Amino acid sequence: MTASSPGPLSQVAFVSVERMIRLVHAIGVGRMLAELAGYIEADFRRWRSFDKTPRIASHSHAGVIELMPTSDGVLYGFKYVNGHPGNVHSGRQTVTAFGVLADVETGYPLLLSEMTILTALRTAASSALAARLLAPPGAGTMALIGNGAQAEFQALAFGTVLGVGRLRLYDIDRAASEKCQRNLDGLGFAIEICASAEEAVAGAEIITTATADKRHATILTDNMVGAGVHINAVGGDCPGKTELHADILRRSDIFVEYAPQTRIEGELQQMPPDHPVTELWQVLAGEARGRTDARQITLFDSVGFAVEDYAALRYVRDQIGRIELAEQLDLVADPDDPRDLFGMLLRAA
Image: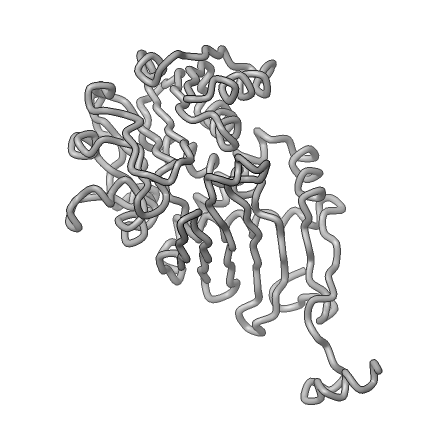
């Protein structure tokens, strides 16, 4: 199926949660993370091709609902995503998502996909892609602070893309760390559960923070971050939610996906509007440098951006021919005469 020949006009490919799980198992988690990182890198390398806007957010006391749109002029993609930290107390996911890919020329949708699992995969793939450019060479130990739904994906992405083999886990809920250790058992990691964030970061070349609470928190203080460390800050992803003390940002070289969005939602919201940052695509395109010396502190202030979701949806669409992945939804009205939509209703009656 191509953008110019979408198949039956009323039919839209649909990838359900069950089919997404089937895809992950068919490809393998590690391989899928690596391939997603490749798709994200390819789209970041053509960054100027995309329409870009900060995501459209609707905030409430309980959380946030967001739309994340972008287009390269051939395909249009958007993701619906929420962030509700309190959901965990009622047995619901903190983050849920679905996405759409459409043909720009006709406006017809081509793909509707679950993106709760896919977002976890693409977030981890983006983190590993950034770390490949920014982490100290040969880094083998990662502190993983916040051991909820994202933790295992982050670990596997860093293991696959960078060769990280040692994990130091910390969560305020030890049961979350034990869950993470249990899920990663037998997948090639040496894992230690730590009693504090300070203990977790000791000796780690990479620090990943992935906490969920929607508040200004201080997961890392300045004295916890030594020279040469790469920080992958994943959890601070909406206004009023941060994880790092501002002094860490003042000492770090900061890399982001899309600066206008990150200044609103990321750790950067703690900094003046003109605080210098580098967008990740600039490093990939050779327009800026990543890590330059062994003592440099690099910070990937990751909030997630629509181009990453576009790349993930494009990846899923490319897999449809490889396995029996998509169902067909009768989603678009398709009258015999496109000018006679009402007549379609009459004939059906």
